[in-house]
Image (cartoon, rainbow, N blue to C red):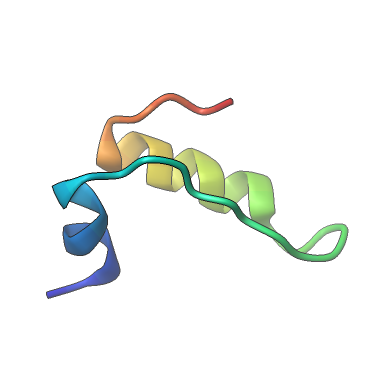
Length: 40
């Protein structure tokens, strides 16, 4: 089971932290797309 599979069960909020230019927005967009949850 992958992390994405686990998050599909009941995603509430996902917080992504990291330094500038580390790909936070890219990761957030990908997770939003795969999990079918809004990107705020």
